[in-house]
Amino acid sequence: MLDDIIDTSDPDSDLPQIVHALQTAESIRKEFPGEEYDWFHLVGLIHDLGKVLSHPNIYNEPQWCVVGDTFPVGCRFSELAVFPEYFAENADSYNALYTSDHGIYTPHCGFDNVHFSWGHDEYMYQVCKNNGCTLPSQALYVIRYHSFYAWHQEGAYAHLANEVDHQNLKYLKAFQKHDLYSKLPEIPEIDKLLPYYKGLVEKYFPEVLSW
Image (cartoon, rainbow, N blue to C red; front, side):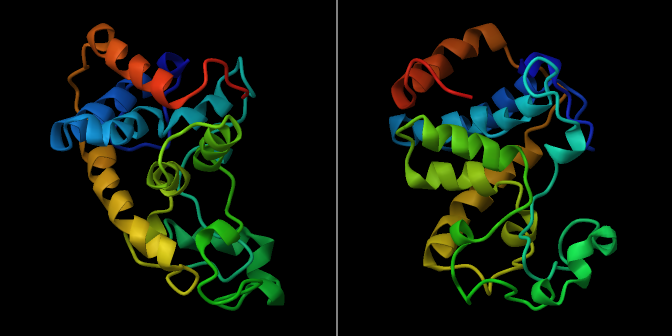
């Protein structure tokens, strides 16, 4: 199904998502070879799989509510988020409960205790979690927060981050290098690569998944 999805919000690529997925995975595999990091290779492959929410044969959601950056809600929006001027169109910007730095949260409560805008990151994280996948916690963190650019690129919302977030930040930064800069016009040899990645899927996921 990723063959059919082109992320219209992505300024760097107009190739189908399966191409981006394999380019990201192979870029990670090149820098982090070996079985020790095979979970990282698989994260590269599946990190954007939540975009199937926009596939007409799945949920047929419009892309604007599936793709793009994610950000916390229930507190003041950061000016370091992408296109922050559009937060003026969001009614939460004028709700006194949500306009302080911490809003409805406590300092350093951790992002797992913060409500985020909905998107493909959270959906794929929930698919992994609710199907009992055995990927390590840092893999699930990358899947869940890889579109939270205000945090891992700009350092925003650090007042809500806890020790787990700071420990996993290095994995997000390592991942983003491959996610952003592996978008090349050369299309990988999909048929030759898929057996390796299917093996990783079988290693970390049950045979049947609930979507």
